[in-house]
Length: 402
Image (tube, rainbow, N blue to C red):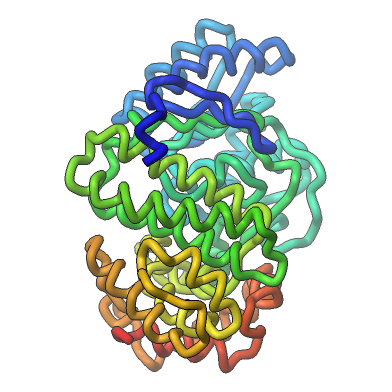
């Protein structure tokens, strides 16, 4: 109900570790951002984007004008794909170094921003490559300034210190988390998100739900995480169907973007565990698999696994999706099937077999969870232990409907 008192056309500044300009029309703040960059001596930037969305949404018109008006030169790397790879990062870094870029402007969803964060590190470490970052051969302590112009309502990367890039030769999809890659500025403008396809709309919103389910149930959770998680899930439950029904519904996009931004802050504090640790091998092996779809497939089995350990928290934060949960460990299957039913209700009924995985793939996937750099750290803070039996059970129960 409180949402009705919010004027979505008023752009507000929300301060996390990043200064976020939030609201319909927030893209216009790029001129203020460019002016500040120039005042800091930044006269050249690399723009990280995919091939089309940065132009199709209209974001590029504002960004290009702001850069030109403020005398900032730019080079555009527009080859970032979903599930970006070390090759993208290394290629972009070469261009940025040759151009003399002093900062990174990322336009897109999580992929351009994550790749952009990686380039920002490498601009400060000329002897390093993306493989050094994502195979953890060094720990970066500095990065070039980052501006994230967000075109989706899912990853939350515009407000946190995380980035994910795939090492394709090894089927590794590790995550990094360093204080030096918090974006300096971010823009969340709902009018830039109306071009998302129905599938993208579903998948990015489900990503936000997974972020908070994990952060609110990890070994390092705080009350703050639980509070954010409850609100994020309630907002996604309320506004995702509206965005699917009418992609141009700015109110729906506004509150989904707000949910995703809060989700990014939530897992910046509580971190992540099973769902992300087990999804990364899925989309590393099958790069065409959407990250959000992989998470959706795993979520019911993860809920079933962890409910006995975090029943009270899960009963509370899932109350909008699965009413009448009492916080009793015996409700694990009810909670899991309730979440599975909600996913189906928003058009995501798929399981691993639908995406070409089989029982024969489980051993390889389990091994990747334990050999991919960084993923073992997620398992170590998971609520039901870091044993291979737990991981194997989640994969097996995700092959088919519960």
